[in-house]
Image 1 (cartoon, rainbow, N blue to C red):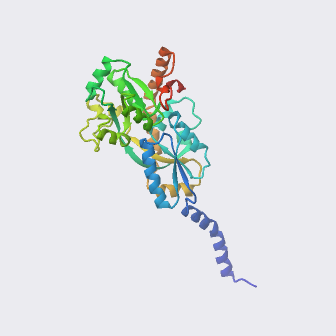
Image 2: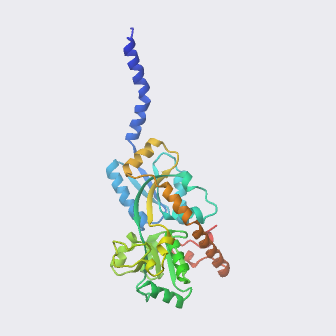
Image 3: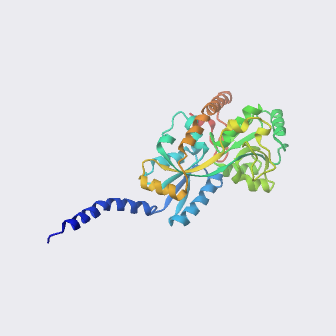
Length: 331
């Protein structure tokens, strides 16, 4: 059978277009199976809470399960490494926070490069840190806390949700600017940290407001200040740390941000579809700016811990607490 020239050309054009249509179809049906969101902290903290809310919303919108997997440890480095090593197909995402940016400057030898190995997908929240104390601490303001700490050097326990975390960095900056000696007690996340703080086993902490606000409202914790440059709408009557330590907010350098990221080199069609689903823009340059802005400060933290370890001849007692990580683990 002879095929008319015009019909033959139409057929060739259709066959040539099939690969493009296949790529479009593949992009449109993402995801075709459950997606994991890896969280580098234990359940109950702000990152976990927000990730679960986002996962529920994505599951309802995209018709596939988005499953939260908590992998606490090593200041979220374990979770980050898990995503970097996962198949680069867009089905393993990472909840990135300020701690990840800090790690890039705090650790000498990492098996990953955050900017190279992780592709930004969406930014989905900002939350302030709040300076809070157990009600047994005889301080209702930042100046009273500073006076109390100076009267008991090295005796006041300052909890954080991990060595090198945003709460740790905020606490170290507070110590430096206020001229106080506080005993750092690190945990593997905000959840176990809050358990001990509410129970009075530790005395103070910088925590993310979403995880702590109900404890504050219930009177189980006392908020003294927020670590931002302006008061929080959620706690309008609580001052900022900078009201008493001028420049604190600017030196801290960030409002805490959570972002969804995926391993590099996964198909661009899927990455584009992820970004469309999350309705956000690539925030990589903003993250790099934060990394460089805190590099000098985190180097000072490392020196402080190394000096303390040499003086004490051992790691921080925080290693004795649930999920504690010794500052001696810092390279």
